[in-house]
Image 1 (cartoon, helix red, strand yellow):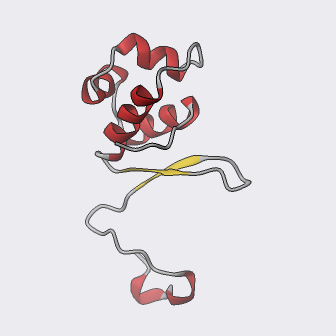
Image 2 (cartoon, rainbow, N blue to C red):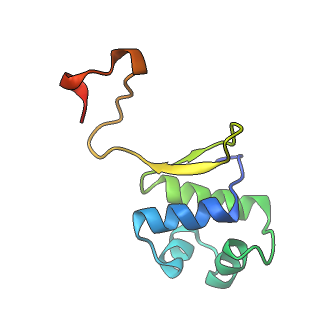
Image 3 (spheres, rainbow, N blue to C red):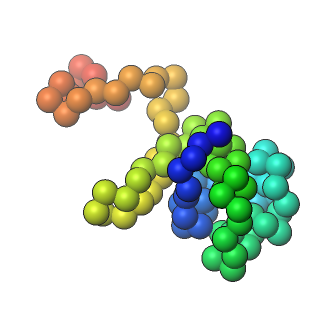
Length: 97
């Protein structure tokens, strides 16, 4: 299980990005819907293992979490059908998909 925590904003963005309802994410993470809802609204900070379970559930459906690097933390979706990462120097019209 991931030991890195996510913010409520990252959770909301990730869930929206993959089209999961709060109920479906709560089910996948094996947490209560109230716990998830309260976390996303910033009403409470669940136990770290609960947040980790939410993160793992989102990662399992293609979400990548971006750590705060001075520009703010965020999320992105994995490319479907390809996990290949191309460096900026190698980017060209042939591999631009």
